[in-house]
Length: 153
Image (cartoon, rainbow, N blue to C red):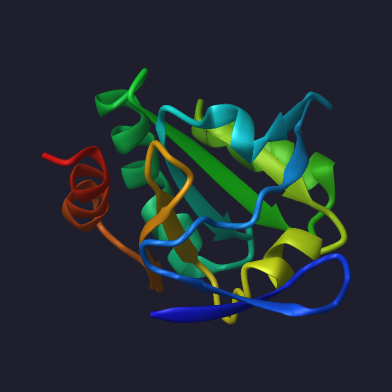
């Protein structure tokens, strides 16, 4: 799979499976910053989603299960796309999710990753390299397959 990513200088980069992913920094619901590159050494599952997306809502319990199964080894980053923080916080609290939720308020990271549909998931290995990606909802078994591949299991 090949993705084209626009860098800050507007020159397109080609990001492929087995190549480094674009770095980003986004805020959590409580205002803390998370920088993707600071998570090197762990496998990171990045899931782009929205509360209005039925398929996103469908896969959230499985994201939570994955988060609990691989806590300490895998970081789940649920990147919410352009929604009001209050609405997102209510949704997360109501459903009892404990994975990290990031806010892409201006859609900059969503565009950088060329997300064309929700949900979209990327799995990044311990070195910051794209291990796998998928557009569309997944179940726990599919998520676990992608994560285990990145973990080398």
